[in-house]
Image (cartoon, rainbow, N blue to C red; front, side):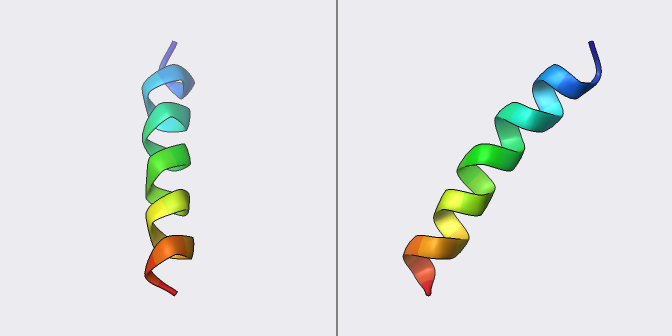
Amino acid sequence: MSTFPVLAEDIPLRERHVKGR
């Protein structure tokens, strides 16, 4: 259950890094 919030935050975080590139 701890991976659910982590994955949800890992998706937008990675998408933001790619858009910032």
